[in-house]
Length: 282
Image 1: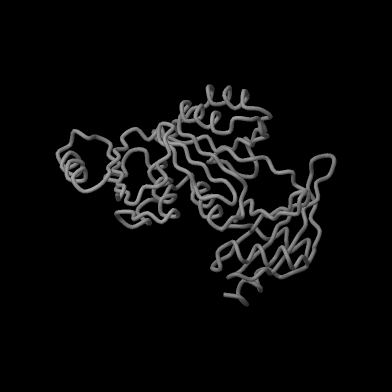
Image 2: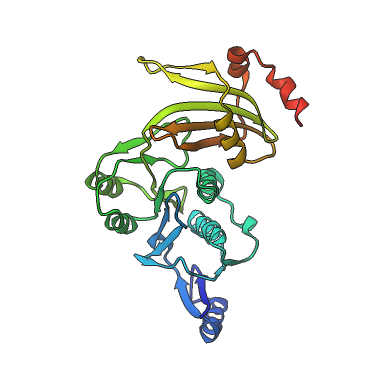
């Protein structure tokens, strides 16, 4: 039977009640009114999982979101993940942006391309408790603020007890919206790279070398296999500064693709005229 999910802020509204009652006559119907109960699981090599109050609802066929006024982040992530799962989203997917938390949407996109690490998005303390039950055994994790940049605010946790403590002290409300803990599996990084791209072409490649004092220096390099991976997994349009890495097992990951990258330091370190390359490749 077709499975239908209706997202409403208030079932007491006349329209919401009519939609829900009619849907019950046609579908196996699920009502989603408390989006703080959501937990999203994006694991490499596996389809996304959507858990609502601990129950797996990933097999929903049709998703209808009646309002985008409240819980914008949760609704947008819900819509984009079900879109990736092949569900029919009532309304255009472009209706569901996120704004300050656009890192979430890029993570969803990279998961579909299988070029990011495992990511977990619980929207409440209870959802985090469900995640701890799901993980079951300790694993090294990164906690990231979804509205930060340049590695600010990142915490490394070693076990699930630490995750529980962080969740208990974490504010899931930001600017009157409900946001998730942004959790990723820790990667044992062997090498880090920065690539500057114009319309799908790599025009400058640098290896990031971390010094003992914490400073970073860049070395010009040419790594064809990595360049091919980056070109395959990021947008083919526009100007991008792509941070990528290789772990100790040789796997590549896209860390971030910045659409407003500064390039003067790249020119200093590579001798490449980035401004000219931009116009040559537009």
